[in-house]
Image (cartoon, rainbow, N blue to C red; front, side):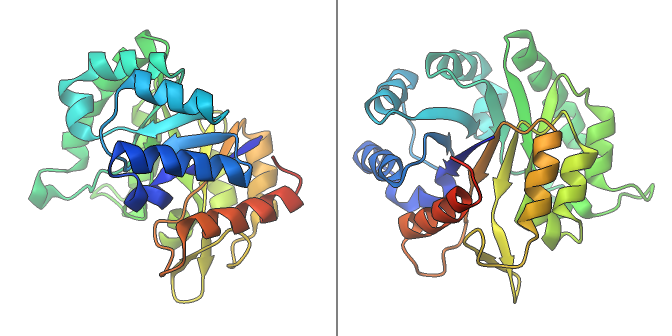
Length: 250
């Protein structure tokens, strides 16, 4: 398994192409070899391909905005093939019926998108938060329903260790439960007070997470810290990297 940096952590410095390019360079300087692109400014696929080449980085996953997935999927496919990224991610879906973002709405919109990505050799990846641990009227967890309804060959899960724990779940158990569908996972730690923390500086049992990820087919463990609590996001990524390297990962 290889470790990487989820660039949503550094989104504030990636809102123009100059800052985006500089941030890629700073991530590479830490020692990361892979990234997930998320929360950045708009970019051309050819531009990202060149920036990755310059910094000896590989983009292994994106979070692609819903409007692009719905309205510009052909271009999304072309871009991902341009910068050689198989995994196309959905970062957020609120499951809020009052905002027309219900489970039923999800099932109308995303299965055809997942199938088309699959038909073009790509793989749709769903990223969880804590709301997937709500129970529907039938008493089933949303996350269970998603896994059962969409075929494994068309949709995987970018399981997030912090958000699973925030939802009342066990991160290692869920990685094992969705074995074969978790090529990428997010590592963020859970500290007292429900705070996001640098990996290794909170209370998640990462030894079990690593064990289950290894046996479940995970390829990439991507460090993400949505909230760095006023600290430099690059420094947070660095401390996570040093912890993971001490655990034997690169």
